[in-house]
Amino acid sequence: MSPAKVAKFGGTSVATAAQLRKVQAIIDADPARRFIVPSAPGKADSKDTKVTDLLYLTQQLAAQGQPLGPVWDGIATRFTGIVADLGLDLDLRPVLAEVKARIEGGANADYAASRGEAIHGRVLAALLGADYVDAAEVVLFDRAGRLDPRTYQLIAARCAGPGRYVIPGFYGRDPHGEIKTFSRGGSDVTGAIVANALGVALYENWTDVSGVLMTDPRVVAEAKPIVEITYRELRELSYMGASVLHEEAVFPVREKGIPINIRNTNLPADPGTMIVAERDPGHQVVVGIAGTKGFTVVHLEKALMNAEVGFGRRVLDVFERLGISYEHTPTGIDTMSVVVADKQLGNRLDEVLEDLQAALKPDSLKVTARMALIATVGQGMNHAVGTAARLFSALAKARVNVRMIDQGSSEQNIIVGVEEADLATAIRAIYNEFA
View (spheres, rainbow, N blue to C red):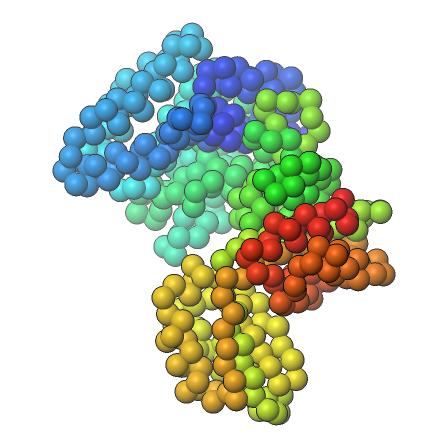
């Protein structure tokens, strides 16, 4: 494994010239930080607009045959202003003119959106005296839109020399040579892919928070930072709404056992959170709590359901045929519940119920709407006697009615369903018990 590090910087970390000076100081402080993955400029303040959002807007205007006008002028001024404030000898006018012409000529949304990273990568490379690597040269997608494994060899070959390299995040190219992006926040994924390709010792993800917090600070203002968490634990929390790192960014580094360090660009001395393959839970039974609203539970009951071969499969087949993915399926001897996110269900609840009635002929078919799910996650839970008792006692003391209980086969999480109105109260109760 190489002693080098990949350092990815998020949108707020590169939003202004002042922020880029912080990035420069962080890179200069550690010679191992040789591979840098920048995002597009984010919001400079609460009233600002992300450059990526403006680029999407320019593509929409062009598609409607409208002039790009002030929207494009704002983008161009943002980049040229940063270059001027940094005092760089870098003329972006030819690049900006080419991007504008291609958007006006009908370039797709992926091309437009990716230009924030592509242009800002040039700015950061000039600031750091680094070699600029266009991600479209080394990050490939296959015909199904998945990452082409050849990407890893291309990155390794292109970044084999000494010195620093800047590889813009968020995009690559498809088999036709067209620009294709990851989903929003995909620069995290690019950083993880680069880390895998180069076999580095550490993937640093620099953002505007000092690591992952134990729970949502909007619910628990005093939420403690997590010092260390495993890939699997983070995946469980991310699935339930905790969002510091793009959920797909874990897989490339986990494959190589490369740890991730979430750091704060504005407070670089803070150690942040280490995301590792394994950890010693010690006395920290629960590492994090995450919850989210917007679920509906469909309850089925049928006598002797357990003796009816294929019953569960036929239930899930109804959802599959309608193109609806499910979250959880708690079961009893004669009961089965299917938990579905409202954004998946849409306005097809009546259709689901009709099809379930026709296919299963249940004795009872009921619906519970406006549900919230809370995941309590911790690697040490499966060895700590009384963890579940502590969790449910805390909820009972807070007078929160638990409507559903589910536990993953890994025994690293306990998921409870509560009414949406009780979500914040439940999270605070669980946090106060285990923090």
